[in-house]
Image (cartoon, rainbow, N blue to C red; front, side, top):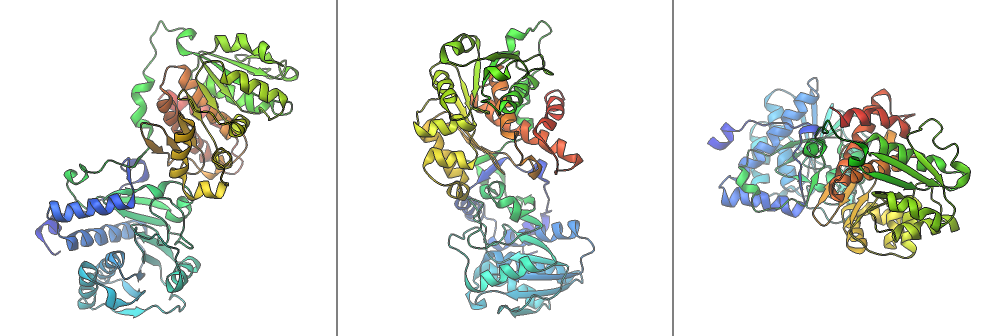
Length: 506
């Protein structure tokens, strides 16, 4: 190591469930890096050595049998990190090949020093000119760092395509090359890594949108920087972790009764879609709401609660019939199976006027998009298509900047916005949060209805909207992960109820 600080440094790895909760934009992480170097006098090359050591340690821990290593290095500091990994691998006797992308003459400062140290240790480098990648056990992606803003082109695009076509395992250094660090989308092309080791501050883009398909497992290392480095940067977002909400779910008093835990009214279930309203209502009951009622089409009323008798089901055809139910409700959840016909429109208009906190989902969001209004006492739960209709964009634009879309929705419509999808984003006036739990098995009908009921049930028990939304999203995703232990394929929305109850009663 180059300094006594480096000699004292012991790299650490962090599993997903113990990752830091604070997330930063790329510009903020660069500022953290600058602060560590200039204000706390940690040499930049020391940080680069620590980053390379951390990445190498993850490589050895994840794939201890790997003997042949290929490092693809770019012309910046990300490439410098890769040269450190290459030197460390060479020093322990691994077979190491390094391919240099871009003009090696552009290397400066710490990255140049890392290359020179690798060469001095006996390593070799070849330029990459589009050739097929050689055989190896592990590829280390050290091409492009977090500062990328333009689409990947030319030799870098070719190299990324070659990495993705290679059978070897891929370890990304700091971020998969080509992935936007703030938005989590590939800029033309991006490396699909099995594991990503990221440094100093977690980048917000690694946890939402398309990023999970590119990052694989995420490991984190703070590179030994002092806590004071973070004092000047307020996190751009934070990860939602269940442990932060424990105080909201205190044990109930022994003398509690159902009136203490609120009354949820679910409005939905147009003809043929009663299941959506039923699942939302059942979810509200399962998270602890004291009472749950359902207002649905009259044809469904006799059978909707046939095997769930705790649900109080009412056939409602016109707004006047709904008024007594609205008057008794603590929280109204509207949208599951609502439809956009005359009945759904009448129910939606009455719910908007009732003066109760709302959870708005599904077709209620589509009706809201036709005549947007703003209020602070609701939670909106759109998927990307519904979010697009609310903002006058297509779903692709929403997915291209999920954080930005959630912020725009909150500014336009108020309240708390839950933008569903991989890496669900929760945006409120207080903060931005993202959920890194959940799995592809949850991509099935009814999951959103269950989430609506969960959030409504928590609101009914007195949680503030932002807390109900964040905790609800976390419980929903975590229950999905528990249910998926038996396999992701074939997972259905009602499979969440059993693990959901266990999560609420640890």
